Length: 320
Image (cartoon, rainbow, N blue to C red; front, side, top):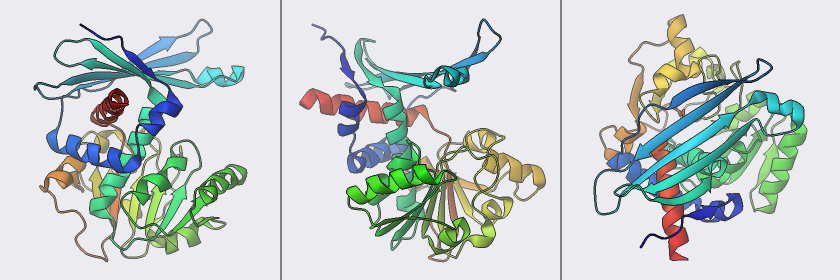
């Protein structure tokens, strides 16, 4: 007999997705693969001419006795800001991949935020120096606030610095991190903070470069999370050109401004990306080549990671 689908709101869902377990679940998922069709974008025109967007990201695991099918629905309505409502709402629905039965509904923002930083941490396991201790976080929003916790799962992070154009927001994040036991400080100078960091992780909506190649010291790992359209970027041409570049998926090279714009200027060629995260976790690519190498990871998000996180949360909830 079928059981009623469960509902996992944000707070409960976050507890079901501890970073160490999530990073490991993602490692298995990127190794095994799944079916993840291209995300669908459906424009929605409002009565006053404003533009909304419906985004659908489906994925399903390979055939087997236990199989899952999931889809994330993201509704983007920028005009909501004028009404003090969120511009983005998201829900994730998980189904039995063999029967189609609805298993669970989950908060999509929590799935997205936690899987995003966990994917970056998984990549850093292969790309950052093993002795990396100082982490610089660019941004202080919902996703940026999770970065230190994710990196703590893969590296012995001893110091965290926060930089944000909004200092008050950065100070709020600093207070949270200090309360949770991090040695955390505000970066007054972005250049100085980049120069001293072992890992630079950016989760912003910048359309102009923030991380400059001139500032990087040998051995630095750069992680670019935030810029996800062709017109957005968090790094300059030199940063990308001097780095060994890896991506979460092959599509990233055609979606991310951090890679598209250097191609347009001729700073990098079409074959500049060395490999994907799947290549790293399966051993098809070796990752960091030396302690002096510059490495860069660019992610744009994949439905595979959503499905992996939702599966982990659902199975953990069923065990409780």
